[in-house]
Image 1 (cartoon, each protein chain N blue to C red):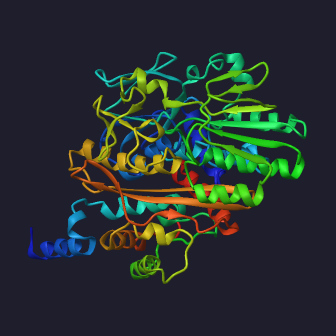
Image 2: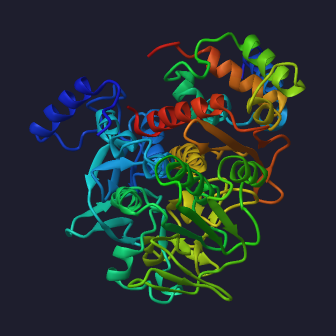
Image 3: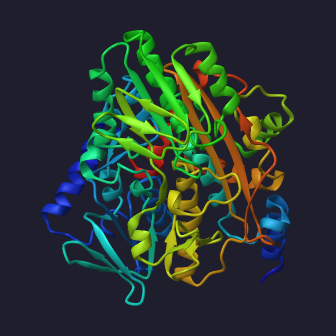
Length: 103
Length: 428
């Protein structure tokens, strides 16, 4: 493995949280837990729920942190966001940010 | 029937392939090239099975996926209480499998009679066999009719409906309620946990009571629960019963159904006897028959034990089991939402097993169940479940919880949930 690749892998590990970073499809798998309400790959149907596909990762992370802290009003997202680690939320956000807004 | 949002292109594509006799369909709609990584046969096209088929194809690229279900379309249990309450039609909860076919999944309408794990083949009632490298079984539940005296005959089951598998019984129960005269009694019995959809009976009581309140105001709902208390969203349902249905819903805990008389629509309990005009019995449940025939039922002689990292049976290698048939982990309801989530864990693991890659060591499941307490207001319960390597199972994560109160906003979210989860599993 080259030094550059090793550095990339190390930063990915940091981003996703070292304890759960072994799986190459971590972000994809975790993001799939959101699909039931937010649509497959974050491409939501209807206008009741916010789409996540193509949304910048920092925005998704910030929103989840606001849900966790209670700063953002919610019916359910404060309860769901608290169930995920910060590393998992970062991996989910990175995955959704990379998805096209519409297929 | 509900049409998928973009039906015409897929219909045309599917029809063209079928007309050309171009089975197997895989590869036609997917640009993935190279040899197939394996054959997966999925038995059961509900929340678990349909999702597994979809995600195996979506994530797996060139993989042969066959989905077998006995029905021509998917009919959703979630939202079916709205049909029983008179607010939705069967067409609103029915979705075709065309989206899955369009993505290259081979769909077979048929009855699976056996799974031969040694030969790695699924056998259909028409004699066909479907060879597999990995099988997925998402069979749902079957009813233990014999546990209720008087219910174990087709004639009794025609008169005393369960309405606990969405389909013809959903509409038949609605018709019974419509035919019931004002001043009548609708009795709904709930079995001891575990059963499919813990909040479902209480939601059904609310929606039937709402129908009575508007159209048959002298009628009553008798809710007879084998359990000592409301099993899901307790405070929210108690509030709904008191605020909206006082004098209509009579909730009676600790009433375990012993016997029914189909001729007189009488239900007998330990200390009580109830005569109804519409008697709706949700019978005790177990993993569906095919799970037993496949040798998978190894928990309490009733449910299927699985390895939670892969959802693979602990009794029979190579068969992954999803949904209501599984012996659930802590605080996991038997819900369509959770079956969908389990299917994604299974799909990811099956692809890794087929490719000889290490299994994802840290899967996560989330559950959300919405229930309508009136036609226009809903409530939820939600949990997140993190895999715990030491316990070899899922543990409930921090967070989770109930609605603060019923609201129209959550009713809107509930309808949006249905639209999105059906699209997620059926690729509409």
